[in-house]
Image (tube, rainbow, N blue to C red; front, side):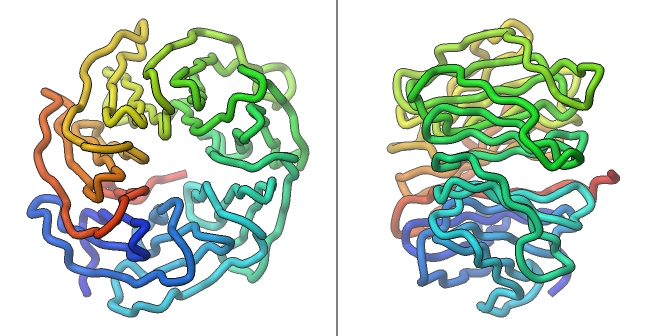
Length: 315
């Protein structure tokens, strides 16, 4: 198979992963995933592999092959893997799990190289653009910064006690971090650089974005500049788009019939893909908030999506 310029994948409680032609909406490949549900999908920076985070393993699939078998399996978590992502040149992968740990995996070597204890089920992990700090959010409401150079936790904060942090997102230039919780609230901090390498959080804004849960929050990418947006996907069936300048509501994406679990921006921030319990994924225009395409094929809730339509990033 030739390498597609756009890789779009979704996963569902129907135990399948589907690859889609983004423009036509045609599903061109289905991978059966019988062992567990898939909680999160992520595409490697070079577009060669798709990571599927399940329970309790992570499987790596070849994007450009037709094989239903994974090329690699990562197996040391002991519960649902809720977060997975890659360092910008693709040398290592990070993950977070309901087993309470954050792990780092060298993709060129077997096994897990590092493990950090969060002491509560980890729901979300993001890599700071500096590539040297991971930020995790857990079920008890803790946000922790893991300094990969010092190999320790450099910062802890609890925006709301005993309110689960569902999703974290960091601005592409490292200037902002947003945490979304089970009460529909987004906490926004400026990331200040101290004299040490530690990242300091300066409270900037508290946004009551939804009445229901926020299941995913996501800041827009670099090529979206000078516009900066925050997308919040919710159990109230909508996705809201906020202008980061003042956190005013720009648009509400209405069309999904059930919970919206995941969203991902196109590389230029002009489009957003969403995944929902109504079994569909959808493509939206950021210019007018209109639905452009519906991806139909899953038989049950579609809970995660991954998109890579850019060039390979340079670290």
